[in-house]
Length: 438
Image 1 (spheres, rainbow, N blue to C red):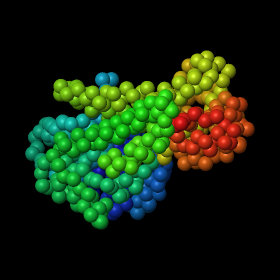
Image 2 (image 1 turned 30 degrees about the horizontal axis):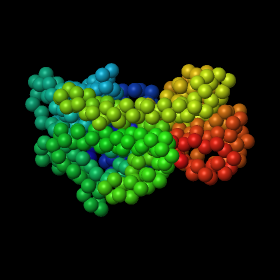
Image 3 (image 1 turned 60 degrees about the horizontal axis):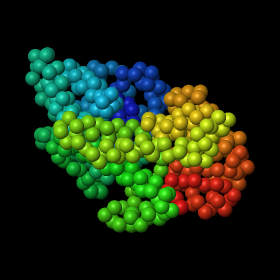
Image 4 (image 1 turned 120 degrees about the vertical axis):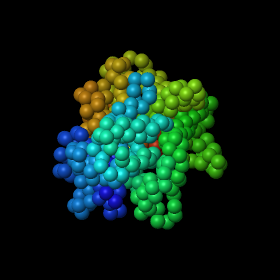
């Protein structure tokens, strides 16, 4: 198939590259000329494991192309994916200006049948707005052209997005006509040769499915974080509790890890947007309000632990922070818990040295020179009063505890991701404070 993908962020670039990987002719559009110029040079705008190889391979094979030319992009694809950003508005609702603009660009230029696919995470009712925008632009031209609008939400995890796309656990298609459904089934057939994972439903249900999935996962995280806080007070161990409840097949183990809060481009934004949708329709989502409140409080937990140990005035104190990205496998700093921690430390007079395996550059763009940056984990520790762990990168899982103890001014690890067994760390002569661990 000839496919156009509008937007070259996490969703758009992964979608375009993976569709090209199975033989499609894909053109990716972005209005950011600097980004497209870098893509032509083989430089990706995001960090995603394995994506660079897929992009390079398909560019070399002539199946993946990049452009800033809207005319070319609309003319190219029978299937037009809209994968632009939907940042939160001031009231928490999703800002749809880029989605609608992409739809209008298609309507202004299309000359034959198109399947327009909403791939961006959008609130219920967006497909109707996209359809109206395209129809309005076509009517302005005095034409009568057939087109279909489809909701095809993404379920990609940053850090595993390529694998998630190539081996999906489900493919949700919201569509109203047989031609669009047939086209989408054919498009995704190469990704599910083993068995059909396609769920076809009405458009509004497909749009709500994406928000519901992220809201459920965020709820599990906040629930476990609150239990972890209670476990600390009660003298229980949240890791043992996790195993106890996770062994129940009705609950399972996924997303039951307690820590210092969730971040990223999806959960915070989508929880707010779903709450806003409920508010606009007279259905307050009280559980989600609590989920968000609990997460914001959880991001303060490491600061609370530092203050409990050293006092509220941290002047003259220095802290090492391992992990700056909101999760491992990405350089994404959006809503990262490290930002809350760093702001709290600096506000109390401390200095900070941070290290992240891939996010140092992006962190510097976001945080600037307010902190120091180390080139490796051990370099961050020199003269620090404590090591604070914020992101659970694999390379942090088995460190040299003797070296850590020698490098730190105070032999203290405050672990926001529960990476270690408390008894094992303390046996090395280190103080160890985690989230909900006995």
